[in-house]
Image (cartoon, rainbow, N blue to C red; front, side, top):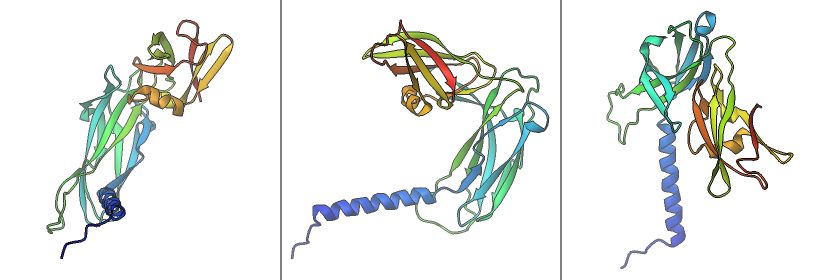
Length: 248
């Protein structure tokens, strides 16, 4: 007797089921959650500290450690991380959290209190792959890590994003070189881009601008540049249009 081969439809359903199982496994691998994931601090005073809440969402205890990196950006907008443990006091720096429980983590900036421009950091909440169950579990154990974004901003500091250069780009596009001339960070996706030429004005929100970043971060630190490749509206050229970045 010959074995019956599954039909094409059955094979498709089996493949879809395998994908769903794999996706479920990936979701179940998330060992913990962290809140907030993004926040601002002041260089000194009561505003220089906050509390993170870490929750263990697994069915067994997990062990975590906290690490701090200073965040800058390369020429292409990619993140550059440098260890900066001395700029923050974090307590506790390591912890074990029981299933379904939460742990408060105190975070305080203790770096230079006289900074004139905002600085950015990543506070990593990393899982240490320690088996506390005493059982041999099948599958691959995944250590889940989170990286919160912290901006330390002096009082009164404001961003100021301007177009420092506009050039023609192939295919009916313009290359915009943006510079943050302010003293605080800016988020391009929280701004609007206004192009004006021949008495006409086109305004784009952050959602429209996101693909023009080509994968680069939308966070602009003071003194940093970012490049946007923007499609030119009809009748607009790199030489006849004015460019402005506006608040939402």
